[in-house]
Amino acid sequence: MIAPSDPLLRVLGLSVQAVDRRGNASLIVDDVSYDLQRGEVLGLIGESGAGKSTVGLAALGFARRGCELVRGSEFFHGRDIRQMPATERRQLRGAKIAYIAQSAAAAFNPAKTLMEQVIETVAFHGLMPVDQAQMDAIALFDALGLPHPQSFGNAYPHQVSGGQLQRAMAAMAMMANPDILIFDEPTTALDVTTQVEVLAAFRNLIRQKHTAALYVSHDLAVVAQIADHIMVLRHGKVVESGTAARILQSPQQDYTRRLVRERASPTEFRKQPDAAPPVLTITRMDANYTKASRTLRDINLTIGMGETFAIVGESGSGKSTLARAITGLLPRATGDIAFLGETLPPRLAQRSKRQLQMLQMVTQMPDTALNPHQSVLDVIGRPMAFYFNHSPAIVRARAIELLAQMDLPESFLHRRTGELSGGQKQRVCIARALAAEPKLIICDEVTSALDPLIGEEIMQLLQRLQQTTGIAYIFITHDLGIVRRMAHKVAVMLKGEIITQGTIAQIFSPPFHPYTEKLLTSVPQMRADWLDDVLANRVTSQLQTP
Image 1 (cartoon, rainbow, N blue to C red):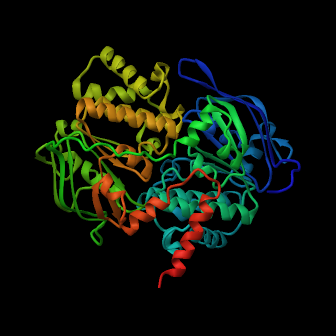
Image 2 (cartoon, rainbow, N blue to C red; image 1 turned 60 degrees about the vertical axis):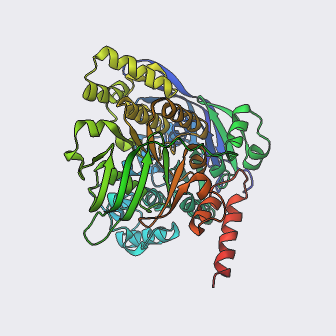
Image 3 (cartoon, rainbow, N blue to C red; image 1 turned 180 degrees about the horizontal axis):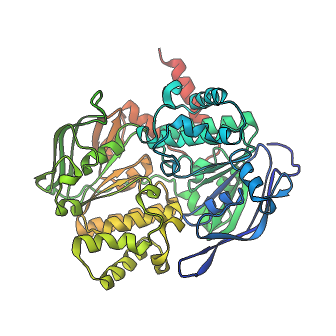
């Protein structure tokens, strides 16, 4: 921690309002102030819609579509960013203040290679020759633990995993050696083992380059590993702030205390449901993106009615690819998938309207799953109109009911999805899937964009629906705490294969499979020195391995 001096960034009385299509205005950030010193990391914590990302973007003098900076000042090196000419602000963004977005998939151009996009900022600002930029990019790929750093940049965004794409975005932001980095949920898409490595890489790069950072997240345990100070936001206001150690050890506000308690592991696992007919059976399935390799190998699973089956594994292990094979987005190469007693055609386009209705999916990245120009009513109402031909009045009433279940107000019906926070978008995606009244929902990291308390409420809602309707879930997640609380059974994937599966009690009780043990020890804990201990233990294990 450096000695106090004139802050690198000073924000005073920041207030931001959102305006919907009907002209209704609401304050989403209210009178937020903070100082950021060079070399300091400030963590912004809060529930979905609390204003965290909005505060982060305001450091660039920017507000997303439908929002407006109405009061306050942001001083960078003593100059008010909002008073700068537009051309000067553009020169500032990316070069001096860089932003790492929450959804990497929505931020990359699918028609350009990763290398082209990673070096684009320094090329735009004319900061270095292309050859030098490519060498620096490769060094950052290596520092961030990306595979085959020399050739990684030749890939296109859709050819790498979500976690790898998020790290590529971090490399892009760091290329110009900015004074301030704004991390907006940068580890949301990462599994717990990769998250440890990426957090360590972020922290080391910040220390080496003496960069200041805003770290936006809903995960207090993660933020505590990298932040010097933490500011807790709720409903757009600062409810508590202090050093990371003080926030964890003696939180003053009830909301903060609830966040600290959230990491506690459940003492009991969910009771296994009574024997029921299978809703989905996968037999000896292989799937691949290219003819030269098998992405999934010999997958065998059976999911019963009313059952939650969790799929866990590190980034790139094949979890989301498995979901794509089940839904027909990636046609399987061999094997069979039986759904409700019928063989599912390999391709989505070959499936009947009833099969499409009964099998729904909520994807990992809501930004790419929603049209930002459509209203929430359009999004949630489409399945009801398509599958059931409901009247507009019935669609509206049911949409209001689903929004209430997702803890979203009726006023959101007429807001564009592009005006919502990441967590709010994800809840709209869940509501859309439920609107089809399916028998099986594939939930691909559905709570990763939600703060822990809202995520817990959504899980409880899904469990209540399961108990009353008998719906089954495939829960793809990297959060083992969710698996313990939500699932009846779990399969652990590694490099496209299922290496172990069974009931939660079987998989999460010793003796552990070595890879399962690595996953369990990588779950962040509510103490500021947890990351240091994990890294030290990994070094010790490597030294002891013959």
